[in-house]
Length: 290
Length: 163
Ligand SMILES: Cc1cc2nc3c(=O)[nH]c(=O)nc-3n(C[C@H](O)[C@H](O)[C@H](O)COP(=O)(O)OP(=O)(O)OC[C@H]3O[C@@H](n4cnc5c(N)ncnc54)[C@H](O)[C@@H]3O)c2cc1C
Ligand code: FES
Ligand code: FES
Image 1 (cartoon, chains in turn orange, green):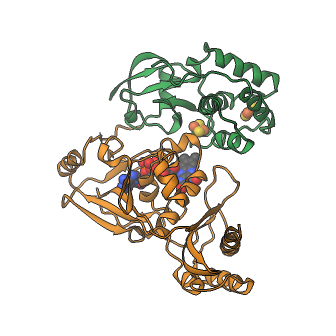
Image 2 (cartoon, protein in one colour; image 1 turned 90 degrees about the vertical axis):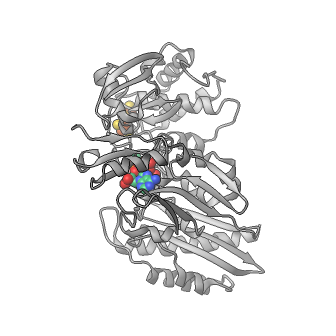
Image 3 (cartoon, protein in one colour; image 1 turned 120 degrees about the vertical axis):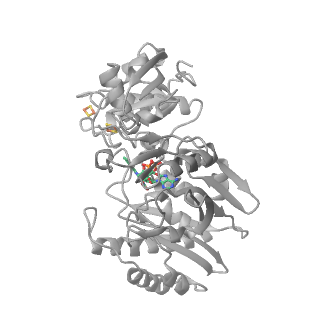
């Protein structure tokens, strides 16, 4: 392996200083490395690595009044074992449980999962339905801005981050309404350790046999993860009859835009997405009847 | 770059490039060859070690993350009593065939035994604990049998090794 230039700042301030000294260079932000190490031989050889995993400000989980703030370099297993997340954001727990393995989750960060911008990133669909916001630090302007998570993605594995910009925090709003239903399921080659062919995240409020509101996001079936707003709008205020569920499945099939790739075909992805929505809605009904 | 770390309780100093893998440092520089390379991509778990007391794939850990790290490999655990009990259970249950995956499974077994002391562990939890380990020979049943047996034995695994 060649000698790559590398820095490991301990604070955002140091990060900014390093950035100013190497302007014009191609910067490779490195966190847990579970994505980057796999492709380490394909990394641009002239890139300068900045390892952000030692920046203390980017770690930890904090509950504020109406939100939970997660540092981007927090490992997936820290989230999985966090009582704050378990008690307040169960959908994220459901998703992380399906991700990789104990070994990987000890190293993989949530910021890396988002920053990778893969349509198959399993923390992304839950964060999209939770309407999470992403805090970004720009070393160029030395400023921090906050954007809705959906605005971060430009295309498959392409984010809107500029050279050197890093995700610093993930801000997850907490809902006031009680008894929120949540659903996450992914379909891959097998149950454990699998890359998502298609997934569905949902949160919903169901009362007096009707859907008060529902938020849906499908993974791996569009160039970027986005809300299924037409399907959401259709389901709003409806009673979940078989006819309604069947119609919703047809609507979501039209709302996604899957492709055929090495992991699956377009037709199969459409079929699984429809079935995932059906599974989600029937599960919702069963939950209400307990 | 020069890196100072602790491996199996001993301070060591190695020369490495930032993205060199912990796996290669262990095997080629420190001759700790109990840790194996299967896939080199985080899938198979043959390279599993403890780093700062957490289970990790050494094929995915870059040298630059090793400053002051505490790494414990299978070669550093052989003398512990719990290790001998694990070896025995694996042998008795036919859980080792070609043996290539075994060091990784044993590391995950140690982590599971440690995390589950005093708790009851179901088959789902056992499967989850081994999601990151692949075996092409045994069909897993024999390994799971060995692990189930070990879980009934109230084995004491220290909270930390060499610290
Ligand atoms: C065997 C295996 C199984 C896996 N299973 C799953 C799975 O089931 N589901 C899933 O979703 N993923 C899975 N992954 C992918 C990977 O583990 C995750 O995407 C992980 O969360 C990446 O985090 P990291 O810290 O390791 O990222 P890194 O490898 O350090 O970085 C990944 C990318 O994000 C960028 N980046 C990192 N941090 C930031 C930041 N703070 N701001 C901006 N950009 C940043 C990097 O520049 C890089 O492009 C798997 C990977 C492996 C090897
Ligand atoms: S060699 Fe590291 S997981 Fe396979
Ligand atoms: S015993 Fe051969 S791979 Fe597991």
